[in-house]
Image 1 (cartoon, helix red, strand yellow):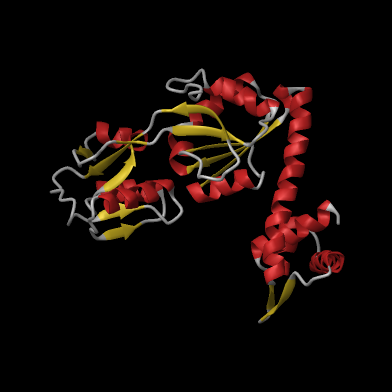
Image 2 (tube, rainbow, N blue to C red):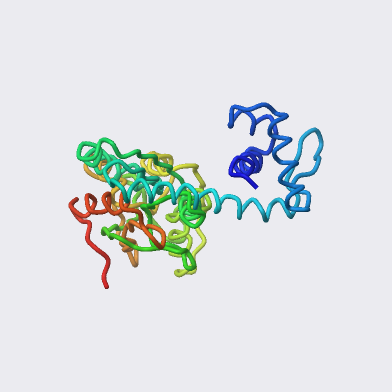
Length: 288
């Protein structure tokens, strides 16, 4: 059971078609089919089945795909750990961040880190909370910048930074907790979950408009579509120029600190980045 076969199978699971998997891996479709067939023979169960003109994972294949991702993630993590241990300044670092952190916190951090350590191989994936924590659990990220890690996530919190969630609207919008529409993030977003919990705790169910990104939510609120619960970091410019105002909603601001979180055994290059991060304003080590 080779690493190549596992990568081929995961590519097929991710893309949903032999052709797309072949294009991702720069191989032929017959090579993808042969690798997956060999994997099925080794496992003794079918991992794909015909579905219309294409293929899909069997229930056994769906289960195995999760293990395959974690195995590949561990292999990559092991390579990164070995290279970083030999020379942290020439290792690799796989970052994952929720959208707001990537937009508002990471750019200056990455620029400063790159100036100090230009030979570190950096990659960054940005996505909703559910996605980035999944990558950490599957060993596909060395460090996540987001909110509090979900219960059950194998995580080591290395640094914390204050973060306030505030309710904002366009100037002149009359805010009523029960009736004013709320502009919301997509499912899977940590901010969306916080907004839903906030409304549920107050037993209110106002109209909701779901938009697909943090930027769209902020723009929608500034356009007068309704209220939004957002990180104060994300709307500093809009508050400064008057496009948005903070509403004195009951129970706000919500304190939801940013967390820099690694797996159980952070690599030397991960710790190098965290040392840099702790020199930035607002960041501090976690409480004992």
